[in-house]
Length: 136
Image (tube, rainbow, N blue to C red; front, side, top):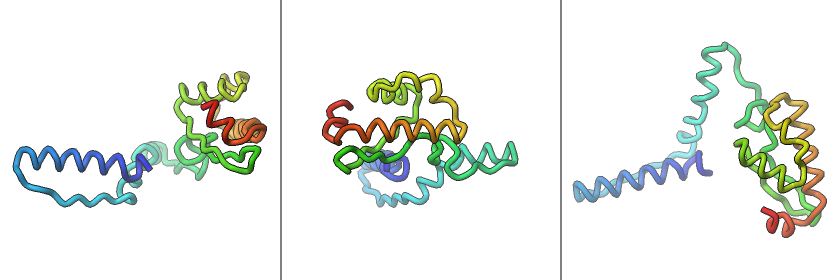
């Protein structure tokens, strides 16, 4: 996962290369996916500390509350969708032929997101995985 390991690994590798170039010494790198993933909680942690309300599981943008999911294709394979940022979400909905949902993607209410997730699932189920790979 990018945020849960490789992002931190790349930064550590680059820092080690820079240190080697300037000092001539190597480095031991220890990259923990658990530690890296824990750092992602700072957004939710700060909000919880300020508001006194813990985020509900599966209700926030980055913990499964949006349409970030795996969707079955017509040939019983799967397509992973992670278009969370608005520009990527808009491109996804345009490519799926679902422009009527463009005005609703910012609505994070669970019922709206479940309707969107269901509509995306139905649309992706219409074609096989090869079709969607070609589309995207």
